[in-house]
Image 1 (spheres, helix red, strand yellow):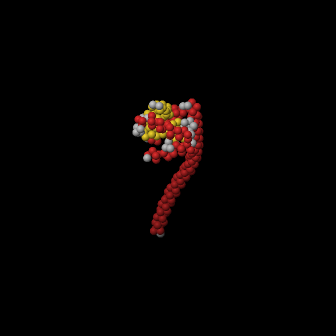
Image 2 (image 1 turned 135 degrees about the horizontal axis):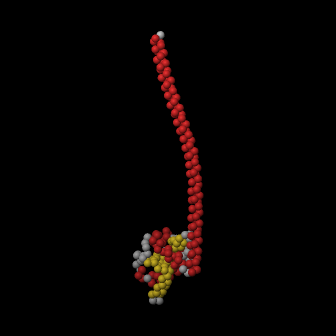
Image 3 (image 1 turned 90 degrees about the vertical axis):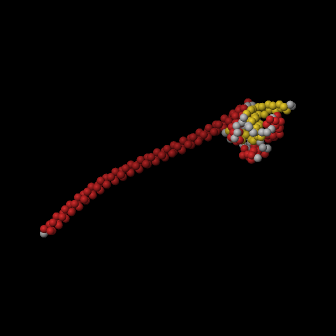
Length: 232
């Protein structure tokens, strides 16, 4: 009986220890559950905040898209206005007879630098020269180190004017400027606007066609077609 009582006492002690462990485990589980509840609340709050952030980002993207559309519309309007101003300025220059000074001359040096990679030593407009009985007036001349550009400017470009430039003005220039005999000559026919048939006629005769490109800026319209001839 004594052994039995001792065993029962030991069993009770073990059960008490087990109960204490279970109590500690339950307390830990309660703490864990509380922490999980806090974590879940934090996750829920994070989800709500993320949803708000996503909504804000969507609103921001919509605003940016609207801003880009407005900027594009503004750029288009500005480009259209620039074209109208260029066209109007060209018409005024035509009426005043200052097409060379107002439209062509300011574009000569930038055009030569852009396409030919050189800076003119001298650029002159409306040059008159006489040699004996031969005299002529040239709309514009740009002199570079190894070449010279001769410009013929017409308010209304026609094939007859291009042909006259080719057959009369260019030979006169060569006769009146023998000092440029060693320089390569680049003839340029310029106007406000040159239609494709006249551009093609210039190309066929080795003449550069210079005019407004879509009324945006003065440009060479057949540079790519004449480039192989230039390098030959």
